[in-house]
Image 1 (cartoon, each protein chain N blue to C red):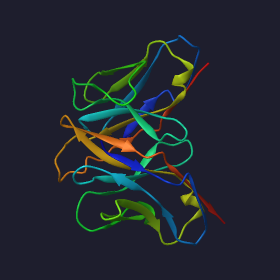
Image 2 (cartoon, chains in turn yellow, green):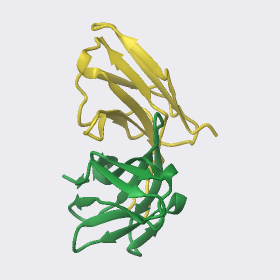
Image 3 (cartoon, helix red, strand yellow):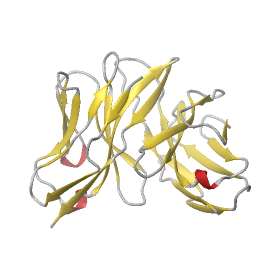
Length: 117
Length: 115
């Protein structure tokens, strides 16, 4: 099992350009997440998808859109990149349950390092 | 809303000495707490979790964490540090709202283990 994979690993954009970050998981997880990591701020949730066909905003959704293409894939799109979106982006997945006896541990991909000039 | 705090930006430890990375939490209801580790240029790796039961939780790579309800803490510990333990450590709490789970992360603590 590859776990959670992300492409690309690195990307440099100019202000105003658009791009899509791809994420796929092969663990048959229901829930998927996009985070951004900035120094001194930990990871902040951008969007999440609790199950196939649903997406919801997280803590910092402005400037981003997402698509849950199928159960395996969850993409993040920047329509008009801004320097403030320079960050490391992580995708994660989990089985997706709110049961009090279940851990619903999230597993992370290797990240995409994005620089917007 | 749930939150976690990691009061130390960096912890320095000599190899072979015990290490502690601190985390305090603020939750309504029962806490679901996690520790993750991030090695340079890598994604986050799950280390351990607390859901319920024993206050001492054992995880990967010899790490353990102690849940203390009265002090609202969930400190990460290891009896004998290795240079290879040098990494960024994140504490997180699970928040369930609208029927969905999310993780709320602390800012992270950089652990430096010196030979």
